[in-house]
Picture 1 (tube, rainbow, N blue to C red):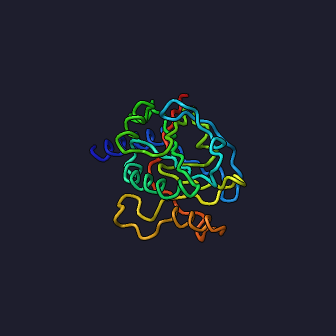
Picture 2 (cartoon, rainbow, N blue to C red; picture 1 turned 60 degrees about the vertical axis):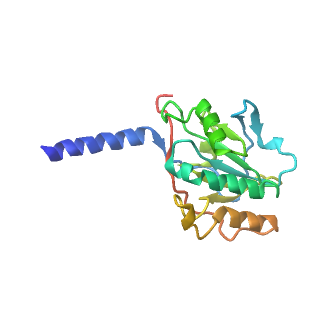
Picture 3 (cartoon, helix red, strand yellow; picture 1 turned 90 degrees about the vertical axis):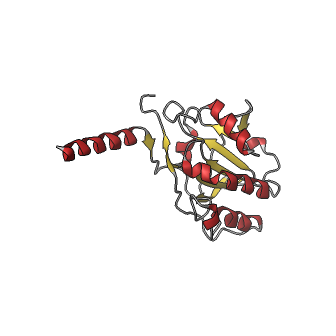
Length: 205
């Protein structure tokens, strides 16, 4: 009897997980040209890539407030923005989660989190969940590096090779890719596996 009850609980859990998460295999690939977008920043202003007149490119990171992997990478994201924004590659953070499904990922929650962590970059809400599917983002965090002159994707994947423990990092994927791009070279690694939480969507919407 216990086995039957356990199986039923597991089945329900799996069903709920599948119902409220999305894995997107479609979307931009390395070398693809992206479309610009316009999303609301936590300061209430709309932000698009075309606003960045002097940028050389963008570090677009799909992240959120609630995923442990995203939280573990927040300081690293702030550091990357501080290092590369002045070199022409600012971070653009986008929260793709539906706040009705993922409690704690609402617009007001984003404001609080950004203030607490000292975000130095825009933190945008993909309110209609129309941007992340175009990119093919499936995790938080999930990184896409794009050059502005061509609007082409140069790198897709993880921030580095340690999803949770910053002290265990031995290879900085994003920084390595940016260092190559800044000297006009193609990154040695253009794609890595993003590790994090699945993006939360509302199947009823």
